[in-house]
Image (cartoon, rainbow, N blue to C red):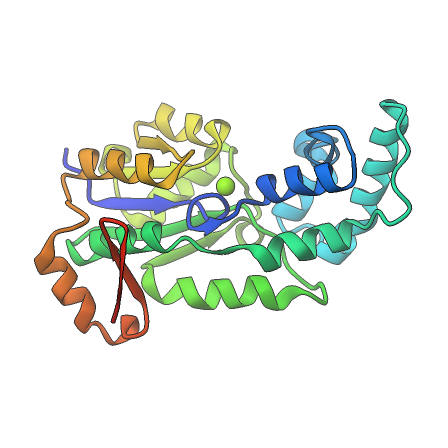
Length: 250
Ligand SMILES: [Mg+2]
């Protein structure tokens, strides 16, 4: 069965740099061991505070003290001292402010939409009640009009890689698994989708992922007729379109 729907992860796919890469940088700046922040983030597994935040059971502000506590525990466990200026709020604020829309990936989603694909964002995300919530809100405002659906984990009480969320996605898309291609930057999030029968693409770098997307969908990103239509789309009037590394400003 031919593909007719494309599902895109947000962080690390439609938005770069990913939070994970910003955490790597923060760890270097603060002289923390590599993987320290991720270790604190995933502490507690599916019942931990981060998983609860992603399912919308607690807000970002309510999660913050749990994350701080996890960092303290992780530092004790690994026998290191947290720097005096250590602030999770600051680390997150900086990472979210640095994150921008990944234009080539968005352009690929738009091309697929113009070719008749149903498009969707599927993101593990939190209810943001922080003082820095503007960064995330602005990004969602930029992206939302370009997709048919936006599925946010915190609003449906399920998060990737819970197999139920992929069934929810299929219900929303009204599609069979083998009609859907799903792009995510974490293999753990792709496996349940692939087990269901979706085509999956692990996104490590945008160019490789887009080549793979072109291959599985048969839709050429640089199709000029599609580009001409894109250029006329009022939603995209100020949106930069890329071709062969060159920026076309509409
Ligand atoms: Mg991601």
